Amino acid sequence: MMKLTRRAFIATAAGAAVFAPRRAFAAFPERPVTIIVPYAAGGAGDMITRLISTAMEKKLGQPIVIDARGGGGGMIGAKAVASAAPDGHTLMMGATNNFVINQFMFPKTSFDPLTEFAPITRVAVVPSVMYMNPSVPVKTLGEFVAHAKANPGKLSYSSPSVGTTPHLAVERLKQLTDIELVHVPYRGAPPAMQALITNDVQLYLAGWGVGRAFVQSGKAKALAVAADQRLPNVPDVPTASESGVPGYVAENWWGLAAPKNTPQEAIDALHEAVKAALADEAVARKLGELGFLPGGETPAQFAKAAKAEAEIWRETVARGKLAVD
Image (cartoon, rainbow, N blue to C red; front, top):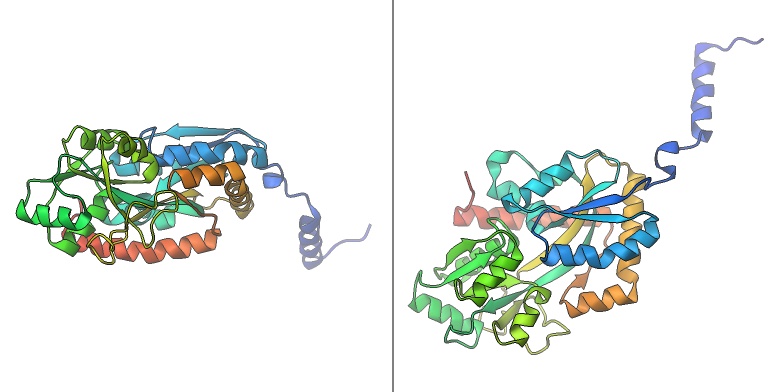
């Protein structure tokens, strides 16, 4: 029997490894995939996840388990995903703040989402509709700003939690218009909207799907949409720029991510599953009805966009001295 030199042995082993079956992710996913939404059930993230889950299940061949885990401005759910096994079976459907705001709002947590997660894709962009309680005696956003200036500190606004996009978006509005509004945080989107309906607060920013029924019933008024263009399904609601606040854009988006070090095979499979879901006609139609714009960008594009947006929110938090110790 011929003896192999050490160099020849290594070369032979390496060659065998090339042709060896890649068992680890050949069958991904091997069990149900859990998507943690770090907010209370019933909000935009929960709706989006439920909307795409059926189509994702068809593509992946495994059930999708949705786990609404609110609290801590989304930090509790986010940390649960970050500490999960990096095998692609535990994911986060996070909002803008989970990726590009919380590290500036809560600096002492020493938790940087841009390094703790492996981005998959942004699933949906949610232009913020500015909802007002009908008791406020104004008709436009410009009039609301004027009314707020005439009544400093007497009007309030709600948010799903401290550090969420609806919170920071109104802080940007305050910085742009020099008005005083009192922030009242709640635990999730449903109670934040309910506070507007009962006039405990006078302003709330959320997607069209969250407040549509209340506007249609007359319990809330849609002042403006904080986007570059009017929503296709809500053409009667003007943009913030058209309503007296030029250049004001406040979009919340929802992105899917896995723990860092998740193998690329899993990331790619999940990205393809999301793209397939967004291409489904029924899903696309429902997204439009809710006022959501579909995502689907590549993991690399998602990472690049998030890094750029993080700088905008860093400046907003610093200027408003909003960081929580």
